[in-house]
Length: 140
Image 1 (cartoon, rainbow, N blue to C red):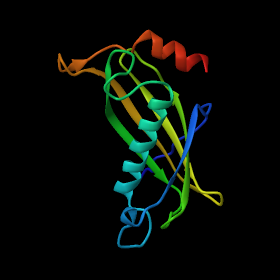
Image 2: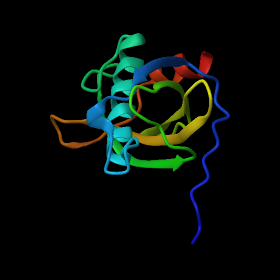
Image 3: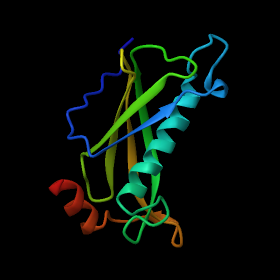
Image 4: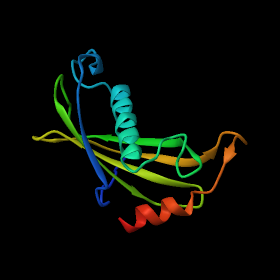
């Protein structure tokens, strides 16, 4: 079986820390895969807010997640403080990737990427990435 391999060669544009909550654990007593996705969503919201955007107002358009990939490296446990570093890459006409590196002080927990598509909810269709976004994130 081919395994997912993600690179995190991006410049870190934003970082945040989020603690693993008791409700984030699975039956193995470690961070559940679905909860990591929720933690990445929280980190993405913080990243967007840091730059003055939201998922519904991203320089005049909205965003929607087109895909996600997570490469797990180690387990995380209750009350571990996760450092989540975020960068962006691979701009196309209607999408780009947000890349995440998730670690504790001791170890790499996971690498992830979400494929973000710019979207117009009023017309219910994909729309172009605003030039403001491309320029802002490419110059950082």
